[in-house]
Image 1: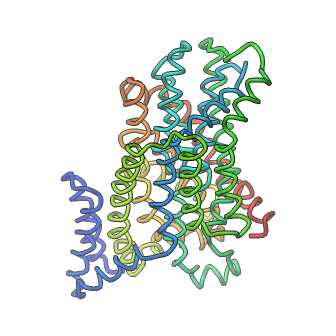
Image 2: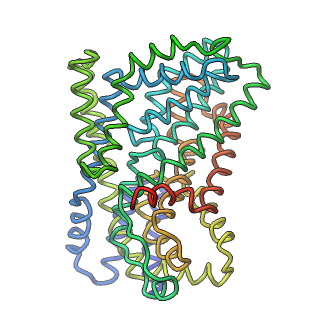
Image 3: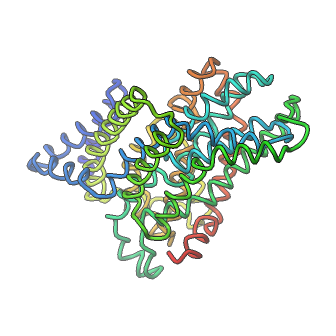
Length: 446
């Protein structure tokens, strides 16, 4: 590894970040400066970057973003919330618990944390305030639960991790020490995210119950009303079918994750126009605008982050970091603790997709050297960075929830701390017990 090149790469990158440059500009200028210092033809920079945005799986990104936006406009998300409320019934803190369930449901069709927070929060934060919940608390649990949108499949960050990781072959030393590794695929990542998502949701529900009992937040009713449950299920039957069709088609092999996103769009248009009859022309145009903006931002980051990551691999940075970590300790639990602490720190300051694209070329070779399954590594990375949605200063979900509920970022951040702590606890459980991630894919033949 050429030390001077690493100083140029990271020095320019962090200098531009400190000066307030966007992450895309920082990555691109740092990579270009490194190419020039190496005497390389800058055209190689452009060719690598162009190739990175031309992969077939990446087509799922704008399609899932559009599908999530259309589902909100078509009334699908509102019906999912109604179902969650009906099942919450008399449970202490039931409305907040319904928020967690609603985020799980919507996460199964959106793939985005901020989109899940916005779709559910628009309905649930005002409803919680009307039922006597503190607005800051309602916003906090919504922001915390919104992170489930990227853990429960389909997940945009999992698509990005899969694209970033599929091109990284296990080091020869790792294969010699641990044997052949399982292949990495986006469908396998999707399946692997189901149980970890439930573990995180269970921890959030437990904390909510404890806090709600202390604050006197009662349930929505004195008992479960089977009539109400039946009505909400009947009214929301097309909403429930959305995640079943999307995920069922992927896992059955009927279509790929990329194709499933197109199926989701077609399904939403049919439901919104002909069945719910709520999808109007103006909101539909707004969803196209939202999709274009988010997709463009992500592709620009991917464009530059791929070149940055390629330089890291070529300069053997992952191998050096792996040797350093293994030189400190060979205890797998301690190494996982160091990796998780690092990911949580990065998640506080860096946008999730950019972090995945930058860190995957560094982390995956390290975990290969330890014999870790790449699917399990991907789930831990996504879960760890998902916590960043609810932690300042970046905390995208906090800003979304604050805009909806009216509470300040500071108030929401403080009230979200117990939920962040429970999510971190769940993350360690997921990391230390790989079967939580790997059991279901194995059962389904992956």
